[in-house]
Length: 123
Image (cartoon, rainbow, N blue to C red):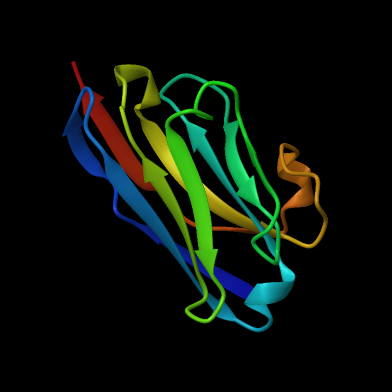
């Protein structure tokens, strides 16, 4: 069992930056691939970024790949999402998730989910 708690969301102006964190508790964090997803009001949840268990592999949605960076610290059981050059369309609740299989964009591949942290980008 893995419990995930996101933090770092908030209100930021267009062009600003935020760093989201996802702290994991439970066993074997280093065995899980980690992903970030987001859900904007009235829209379906969408993939944002993912990082492999070892931290070597990563994958990004096209909409964020030049602006966001995913990283992890397995010693601290934490995954991060550095978000730069934020746009109003990045406004959403951001969720981190943990999964045993490397299918980064597939939400069904993730077994555990956090409660989310809200990001609002004002224009």
